[in-house]
Amino acid sequence: MQTQTSTSRASTGTWSDASEANESTPGADCPICKGAKFVHPMLPSGKPDFSRVVSCRCARRGTGKERQDSLLRYSNLGALSRFTFDSLLPQGVSGNPASQERFGHAYEAAKAFATEPKGWMILVGPSGCGKTHLAAAIANERIKRGSPAFFITAADLLDHLRAAYKPESEMPYDELFDRVRNAPLLVLDDLGTQSSTPWAKEKLDQLLNHRYNSGLPTVITTSTPVAELEERLRTRLADSRLCRIYVLDVKQDMLDYGSTLDMELLKGMTFEKFDWHRVNLPLEQRENLAAAYRLATEFAGSPDGWLVFMGVTGCGKTHLAAAIANYRKQAGQPVLFVVVPDFLDHLRSTFSPESKVSYDQLFEAVKTAPLLIMDDFGEQSTTPWAKEKLYQVINYRYNARLPTVFTTRYSLEEINAEIESSISSRLVDAKLSTPFNITAPDYRGDVHSAPAQPRTYHRGKRERRE
View 1 (cartoon, helix red, strand yellow):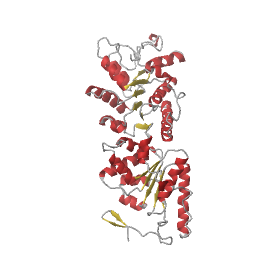
View 2 (cartoon, rainbow, N blue to C red):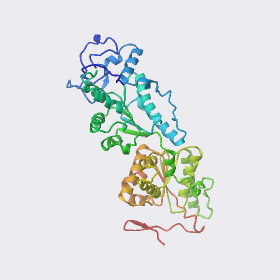
View 3 (tube, one colour):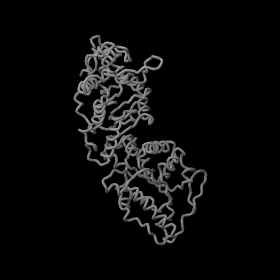
View 4 (cartoon, helix red, strand yellow):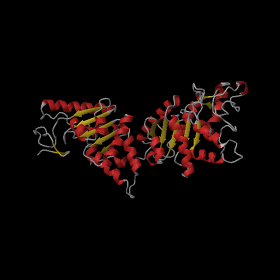
């Protein structure tokens, strides 16, 4: 396959005083950009600003059709020029509601990115999930708007760079590499499928490091989970200041692996079966329980932000959290319910050779679930590994503002005192989180029992008073 780029032998990529009269057509070998369709603007000092690019004058000349044809030739899209947002299902091709919602989020984000490209957009998913279609749609939308975009697969790029060393090459290596490295918008498809030779790693690192440092708009698609990519690349793609990662599809069996909603007890925990009257309780506790019930039903109808239910064992917090999950599930909406200690155990078990699901699959599913219920938070082990994994999940969901429900026996004061501060500060952030303390006692005990006694602390460990 030949790269659909200019065959010019020289290119400075900088603005010049060349006469526009030499530009016979937008598709000609422009003396300013040498066919690249973009240039570096000049700094006040008179030197080119290599950190920025703008469309060359040749890309703005001619009739609308001529400009479109010129930009399309430069784009290297070829047959992918038919991949537009109009030819794409907004919910994707998966029949899984969770995957449809994931794809829908990515679809809307891609349309916004195509309108105003900023930062990096990372599309992750297996073959056939629609990530290349989305990426090509972004490039085609930019061309439609009269702006240049360059599309290439990682493997093809490396092949063309190798071929550029040959004397008979139509484009010198330096010119081709500079064109890709400084493209106003680069779409790099199938990252991770290329050869992993030291030379290939070096070239991709040079390319992405330049675009990372310059903050140049970039779209990357990969079927490899970000956590499995080479470390230097992974640290760049995981930088939330520049990059946004969208996981388009995950396997249903992996979601089931982390979910306990099919357990018979939890299936029966619905709003209809929640006894918020509890006539034996004092009026204040009955009103508190009714308020918790209203809060849960409102959240179930339109999940937004974080909801933190606190209270003693048996007060009803897990029932309300499970009722939210069952309500969403019955409505055909994606939800993932995990018991935090069990989730960490499952995560550890994925390191076993017999595991049917990989660590990255399970961790990514929990981290990016459209709605996540985390039951028994705070009951997990406090090893550095457990703290790190929970922080990664919670920090990601905090930054992404993903709806999440927590249940915990900790009070607000205990959350601040006992849980890692980097986690607790997010749980109590009033801008995102709604903490609610359920004051009702354990409903499984004596119906006339008094509220649970306060807990005492010994050397940082919680103990119940007998």
